[in-house]
Image (cartoon, rainbow, N blue to C red):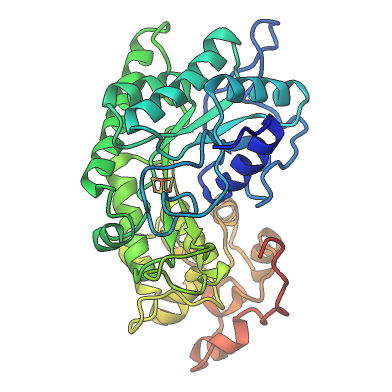
Length: 416
Ligand code: SF4
């Protein structure tokens, strides 16, 4: 490997990290250094600047330890057979960069992932060393997210959770067949076992903390995972089912969806075209429906097209569900239970809470509902209020063109 200076390594390894979507810092424990002890904070906003050029995660220094890898996953630009420029940081270089960037207020924390060098254990040891040194040598109290190596010794993964706020293990592809075909060296069972071990450690850590104040924290921001969308034949229905299973089995904080991007010198087994970015967006919306809108996975799957299993791209999945199950509407805002109000297109969780609170005192008119929402136009065919009943609208055979958002002019992609 050619000798590179830190700036060149940073250029390569920050760019290589842009394919990792799972870097939100929400949900961790509150920690700061206002008492003059230590350094950093997981609270507040600070001044944060984007470093990676993908624009997805601007508050963390998001880098790979190395983009060299002994594996050859077809969809990955860093795979063994890829003809990319390689670079590698030492653990100390990552620590020094994180501290230097933090002190300049460029970042709030670190997101560290890596290709696998020498062995899974060796790579994991290096990543743990970064987190250990930040916490123990520099008393860094900012956010740390480590992408763990599922094949690594469980003890190393456990240590990672003692230093990091969040751990993640990529499930990579939604189906076992896709993983076997596109990442033949990865083992789906091993990935899920590692997720299960992390879950057990998180639960044990919480129990210990509840009993003993001095017990160490273990990954207080939980664990997350990432699925690549569009690299294999999995449908949106497959992806939604897989995500729901992962939430249930491993208590994940988030499943991230990353639209597959064609890479230079791509393997012939990959599609030539990237899926529309809107597909990724629709999957995030369906994820939101399951996590905050009390939708069951089978209901989200039912919103997809019966023949293709794909969610529509031109309307959101909640509206798609409502249009497909028109018999469930209109919903009376003065009587309907919370779960039905949450199914009304255009009514968010905050608006539903507002409706439930207000109707304890008086009967709601359409104008009352309008005050709680951005636009009442989308709602009108789906609700009944004291002075409103959508007789004509709810009987309209093809409602979709009347309420679907108008297509926007095609936008140029910033990072195409
Ligand atoms: S193990 Fe990770 S870095 Fe290595 S080729 Fe596979 S996806 Fe890429």
